[in-house]
Length: 205
Image (cartoon, rainbow, N blue to C red; front, side, top):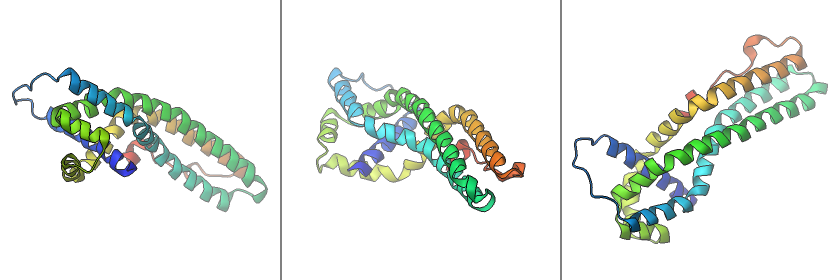
């Protein structure tokens, strides 16, 4: 169930992107109030999944940084300093994830109506929206499955592009803080020993 809901998120982002490329097409009829209410309900039902996707954008580079720092701890930091140094790095990374997740969640919430919402309004009928809400085994689910394969990558690229300007400065500050922590513990850690990847490069893949 969770996999399908996450895939639904990606589908509707992609549908909106397709709609933006069709500028020469005739304008569609105004969306009915009933359909808008159905879309609103679907967005509410998907909120937990939006939050999870937002957090994953932040956690992926943070996990990579922790892995690199852990290797440095084991190979370069004296044994008597590893525990305290590791806890300091873990606290700094957790703070980065918590603060950055809030920023990305806010940006995701801002994008939802114009991407997810408009995609649902354009591509699905009121009856299909009701079937989504019920999430029964239905023709609309088969339609969704057919459209899914081509849109996963475009969704992640879009979200990464939107959030990179927010994350990069904070991630660089975290890198510097981790580097300083390791330098203090090791005493002779070279400048190039700390990880140098960025959220923009990591999440865009």
